[in-house]
Length: 147
Image 1 (cartoon, rainbow, N blue to C red):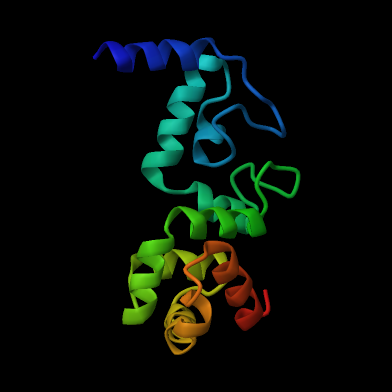
Image 2: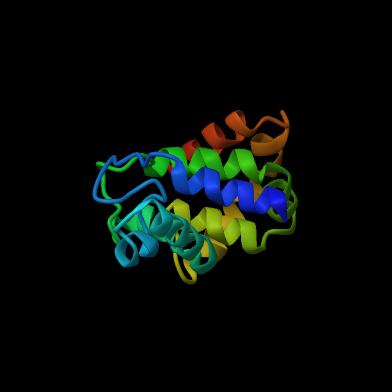
């Protein structure tokens, strides 16, 4: 409990980085609801995290996210692949899954087109994941999807 309280105090006292029209919690629904002070940035970050809206906002340029923000689509893709590489590789072999659906969204495949994206990954599994390297996988996915 002491560690949690220490983290909250540390976050509340940290100076916010204002890169666009949002605070240190980043763009997203939280930035729209909570703008006033450092303590509200904790609430903003919690809102962004629990509502899972930040990736959508960055991709679509909504909810205070725009090209002036800190993370662009290419960086979001790279970060997502690096953070979830093993699960993405596993689901790509299956040809479906939550991680694949989220990655598809980052590549602009929505709705029924996520099946098409999953199929691309499954058919090209060996060329994408053979080297067991997230960076090479990213480059190969970019090449295959032309994004």
